[in-house]
Image 1 (tube, rainbow, N blue to C red):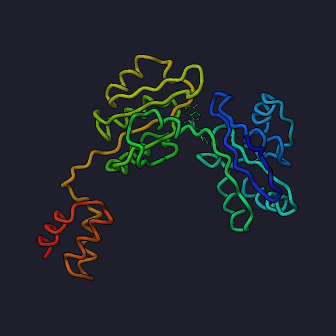
Image 2 (spheres, rainbow, N blue to C red):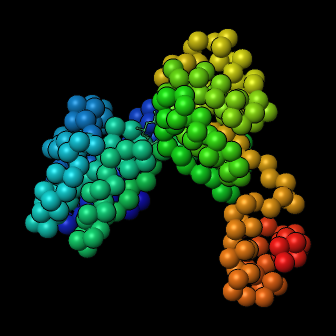
Image 3 (cartoon, helix red, strand yellow):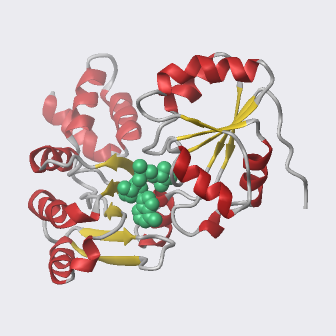
Length: 282
Ligand code: SAM
């Protein structure tokens, strides 16, 4: 086993557990114990985590509302030779959590920012969902109001990749009703609730069946959840509007054969199908 080194002038972005405390890495614990200060969303929450591992260290609050103010202070502390850990309340900082502004600021200043990877609810859920993971789209939180949620879902109706959302289980019935309305009852959904905790539940079914299941069991509306939606099934012969738009632009600049090849490459559609469109456009 190697020893964990903590370097001066460095911000460590440290993932913490999303439920089960044993999911923290030894390296994360070493860094939390050795850095000069830990910047965290909620100091009481982080202090509970630290005390579970008998770590005593200084904390500094850093949340959505003071992140920009803290930028300069953290940059100066690092420039003075300090080492700092950034944690959020759970999981990987910056993933639907504060930290992006600080990390961007420090990187622009040429300061060192080092990841200490670990739990992330989106990735944990994806890893057990049984939906394609070769490509996926992380969509963060769905809007809480139905109108905005439906329009977000409508924007994603033709998204072919698996889509991952964070949502509150107490809204699950409304959310799945909106999925049913906008994407259809057949669309496969996976609900990953209370991951790594006592009531961990991973349930996959069509939107229609998930809706019935949620309505039957109020326990499924408690805790925290990740919602995963199967990507749209694309007819290989259907040509997306975007591909036709690209093709039209390219046809103004080059020969049809080349335009079709480039548009096909950009949009992942069949060259021959585009060639037919090019002929029709002539
Ligand atoms: N940064 C975190 C991460 O890496 O997963 C996410 C923070 S975000 C503010 C919190 C959301 O993550 C919750 O509302 C829920 O959607 C999801 N989440 C966090 N812990 C979870 C768990 N144990 N099981 C299911 N979802 C969880």
